[in-house]
Image 1 (cartoon, rainbow, N blue to C red):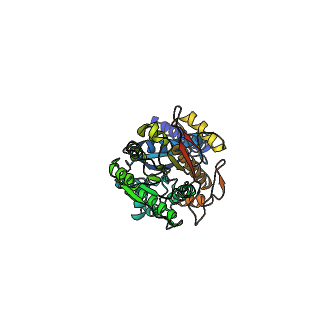
Image 2 (spheres, one colour; image 1 turned 135 degrees about the horizontal axis):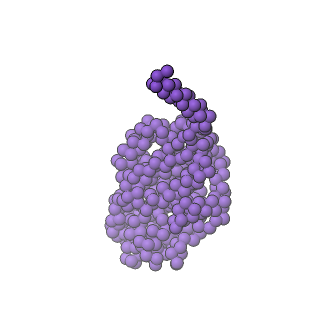
Image 3 (cartoon, one colour; image 1 turned 120 degrees about the vertical axis):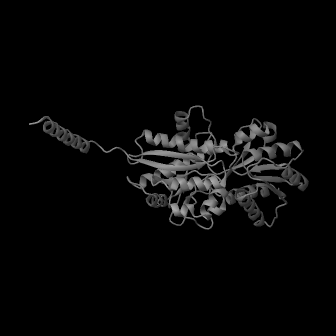
Length: 382
């Protein structure tokens, strides 16, 4: 036998043994990719960072327990800077990747509305879970692609207007962002007032991606109102609070849920921010009265030591729990269509003291709203 023949037999034998060993070993766990487009730069950067963090700590915990049906979750995050064209472009990029089985935690009513207008979500066929917006344009007419965890801006507006009119504060103004987000909130307030046979006294816009609110301050000061509802993000909301109070404005101030109270206090000053009412669409996350709040606080401390509890990271934590349950129910080889079907099956689903429901004809998981107030010490109180 020549050397090459002997070598060939040994090589074939070694290959045979390696194939047998490979067959005997468990298959390498697959990876589930979840795509997230978030504003990690620009005027909404602090919010976007908290959105990503809220999901990350839950995905990290799930992976530490062995993943979902043996597969680990990878959260692929892209930064759109809160710019509508970038949201569209980056979402197309994500949906072009077959391994992306679902989308999660986007921000911006105008941004996501454009995804619907251009057919991006329909063409991609993937669920978008827990967008950080309550815009009615994403809820009406019904769209099958978006699974909401939070109540809508119309629900928030109704709650705030009901509270104000109960206290006989009938002269109401709105300071709003001049885009789909702001106009959705404005329409919600106008509709809530109309149900009580009242009209809005003043509507004062500011331009998106700025904190130039001086004209809005002048308009509302001149209107002599009882209350102002702000449909704004952190920086412009804080700028309005500061300049309105320093100009002598004494109306009760309210904000829609998307602001971070700590950021408002930091930017507007504790004295100016005191008494600001903020509507909330998830339960109070600072006191662990509910099992899911205790779970959230424990995982935040474990996977992001030093990070602070806030409504934004808690809301997206809840969204991550919803998505993971959908992935689990979709089975060991989830597809975009299977994930949507699985999410539809979440009816009266208990996240740990918070119940959400979806169905083939319903994508509004919750209508929970309550109002909190910034106290004299700058902390948020129920």
